Image 1 (cartoon, helix red, strand yellow):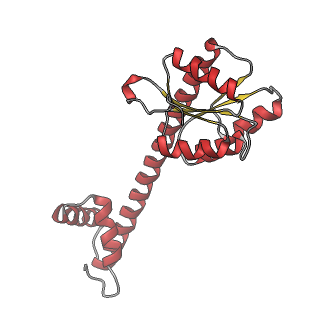
Image 2 (cartoon, rainbow, N blue to C red):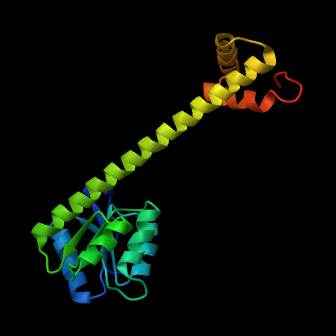
Image 3 (cartoon, rainbow, N blue to C red):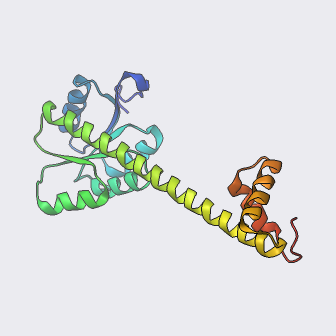
Length: 206
C-alpha cells in the first residue's frame, strides 16, 4: 500500500478508493483527486482487491475501472453496491450503450469515459454520492413503512384474538391491549405480539 493510502479523518473531505489496473492512469487519477480536495484512502489494481479494501476502509465513493485482472469492475461494483458498501463511479475507455446498460443494472451511480479531466471528475463523484444518499434514504423510508404496516397488522390480529377469546368489543379490546402495553412498558406492537403468542389454547392471557 502506498504512502497516500492512509485513511484520513472524515472532516477532511470525501474519501475515495481507486481501482485501476494501469499504473500511470492510477497515479494520475490519485493526483487529480488530491488536487480536487478528495482524500484517497487506497489505490488498487484489480476488482477483487477493490472489494476487499472497500469492506475494510468504507470509503465515501469508489472509482472502478471496468477492465481489470482477477475480477472486472462491473462484477466488483455489483458486490459493493448489493452489500450497501459505497456508491460507485465507473471508469471506462468505452462509451458503448451495452456497457452503460450493464453499469446501470449493476447499480452504478455515475460513469466517466476516458480520457477525462478534473472538471469531469468532481461532478461525477458528486452525482454518485447524491444519488446514493437518496437511494439509501428511500430504502430506509420503505423499510419504515413496511415495519409500520407489519405493526398495524399484528395489532389488528391481537385485537381480534382478544375479542374472540375474552368476549370484548373492538374498542374494549384495544383498550385492553393499550393497558397491557403500558403495564409491560412496551410498544403497542410488542404487546400485540405477546398477546398473539399468549392467548393460546386455554383462551386466557399468559
